[in-house]
Length: 264
Image 1 (cartoon, rainbow, N blue to C red):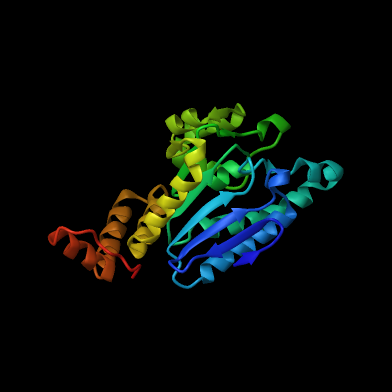
Image 2: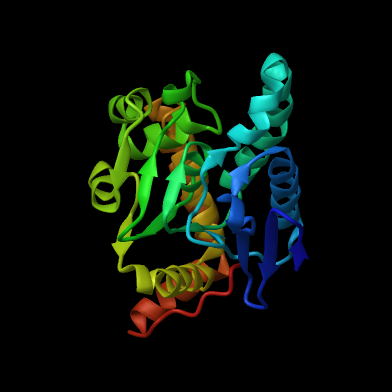
C-alpha cells in the first residue's frame, strides 16, 4: 500500500488496485500536492506486478470539487506559471492512468466538478450514486477546460454535447448524466460502494490482456483511418487468440462452464 495526504493506493492479492482520493474535508480538490501525489500513484500502478483492474474512488461525501480556487486566489498574477507547472504533472499522470492496460471502474458519490469530471470520464466503467451531481464550472470562472476534458467528455457524450456541457457550465443529475452517456450505471446511494467493488472484482477476474487491447483499440479508433483501424483490430485479435485466457474462454464455452481467467 502507498499513502499520502491526498491519495492512497492499495493492491489486493488478486490484482485489484484501489486508488482513493483522501482529502474529504476539502472536497478532494486538485491542487499542487494532489497532482504530484496522483502522478506518483499512477506511476506506481504501472510498476505493480499482476495488476488486473483499478477501482477509482474518493473518501467523504463528494468525489471531487475539481481545481482548488483557494490556491488560485492569492496567486492571480502568477496563474499562467502555476497552471503550466500543474498541468505538466497532471496531464502526464492522467494520460498514463487512462492508458493502463487494465479496466478502470470509477465509483462516484456526491458532487463531481471540473477536473474531477474529466478524471472519472476517463474510466472504462463509471458507476454513480443516485444523488450524485456532475458539473462543469470552468466557464463560470472565465477558464477554459483542462484535465483532458475535451477528450474524455467527447468520447463519452459526443463532441457537440460535451461542448455544450462545458460552455454552459451545466450541472447534471445522475439520470441526466446517464442519458448523456457521461456515466454507465446509476445505483442507490447505499449500494454504490458494493456495486462498484463487485464490478471491479468481476473485471479483475476477466481476460486482462484482452481488456488491455480492447482499451488500446478504442483509444486509437477516432485518431486513425478506418483501414488502419481494421488492420489493427485483426492483428490484435490474432495476438490475443494465442493467450491462455482466450484458450480458456473457448474451452469453457465448449464445456458449458464459466471460464476461469488468469490474466495471461
